[in-house]
View 1 (cartoon, rainbow, N blue to C red):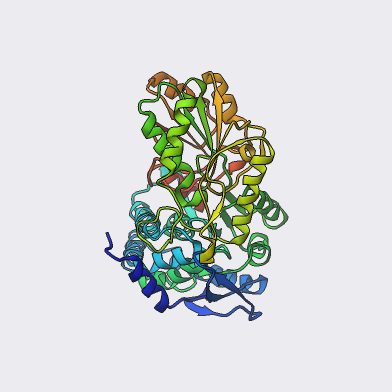
View 2: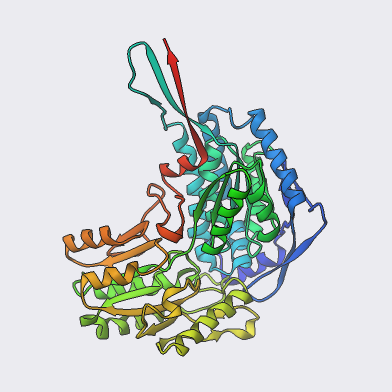
Amino acid sequence: MTSLTRADWEQRAKTLNIEGRAFIHGEYCAAQSGATFECISPVDGRLLAQVVSCDAADAEIAVRDARATFDAGVWSRLAPAKRKRVMIRFAELLEQHGEELALLETLDMGKPIGDSLHIDVASAANAIRWSGEAIDKIYDEVAATAHDELGLVTREPIGVVAAIVPWNFPLLMSCWKLGPALATGNSVILKPSEKSPLTAIRIARLAIEAGIPAGVFNVLPGFGHTVGKALALHMDVDTLVFTGSTKIAKQLMVYAGESNMKRVWLEAGGKSPNIVFADAPDLEAAAAAAAGAIAFNQGEVCTAGSRLLVENSIKERFVPLVVEALKTWQPGNPLDPATNVGALVDTTQMNNVLGYIQAGHDDGAKLVAGGKRVLEETGGTYVEPTIFDGVDNAMRIAKEEIFGPVLSVIGFDTVEEAVAIANDTVYGLAAAVWTSNLSKAHLTAKALRAGSVWVNQYDGGDMTAPFGGFKQSGNGRDKSLHAFDKYTELKATWIKL
């Protein structure tokens, strides 16, 4: 736990050395075109850095380098136990540079410094360490054969992996991909979001310091329609992994089909239902969790509990509890360790969220908390956590992913109605159920079409549990041993004895 104050963080921000170049074959470099873009902090609107804007020419160089490094075997054919030691060293370096990485994350993306340090950096290092620790404990298979045959089922690294990651958890989402991809022996090209590229650029140097060979981990900052598209269409990228919007996820599948049928693993949007039954064991705890489920990370979370389904018999009593709990989640300066709600990532996202709030008014929902831009005098992009009651599942605020702190409250009368409302969405990423009835909890969880279901809590799980969604929330899985399947090919070798 750091003892740094807001003044300490602000002083460090003034002297922080920010790297904005691409990273290819162990060296920082400019784009082939020389193009850059401005990296603006949502905290106060300041210019943080000029960041290199890569395009197809840079993608070509990075992919060629990654392929040559993979084929050379300097990492891909290294013994798993040796890769493990390097991965653990990488995790240690992330921790050692934790305060620097947290400051970059907060300045770049707007999240509270306490979250950046104690959640994002800590979880990112854990993801790298866990993946490294696991790799020499995963065994292949021997098939059941006749006495004069030997059937082997082995996993091999797939080759060159392109990872396109989102702006809401830039470091953590990168490490969820990097962990299993690197541990299994692949070469990885990371394309961070242009909204928050700074930690991805920084950790590339730490990977080299840890002992990952040059060319095994390259970083290409830039825009999705340029360098992202180039990677998705590249004939020598074997696997594309992505976390982001459903719209872009669908386009990446098209690009894969138009090119080399590269494997595509996607984690896309969500509109997650948080179901509170009248027999919830602790209504105050459920209300506190509901507030946190929409306000944490400014609501910029794919699993945000953005639809709060409340049994009508307790709704009049429960909603005020949520309103009260939300009072502890108010925007403040992200460099203040006491702040738990920071700035939205940029002006575009802020205006998008405010537009949805207006849509809630227009569609007849009842505003019961928040709903306004605040701290405008700072130059930053801050919006109050917002609650609408009287929401119908057909309203835009209930159907579309807002990616901001806007909560829709929907009433129901029966378990069947709750499940029907919960599943009435194109998404299927996460859900929660609050009940004291064990059978109801299990049956409801089984009926919900979601990749993660939490009971009497919100946002549970750790690195041992897979993370991903049903339906248009995607087809990939991060975390757990199941993630390793996405970065390896299965080979059957049949030997006649």
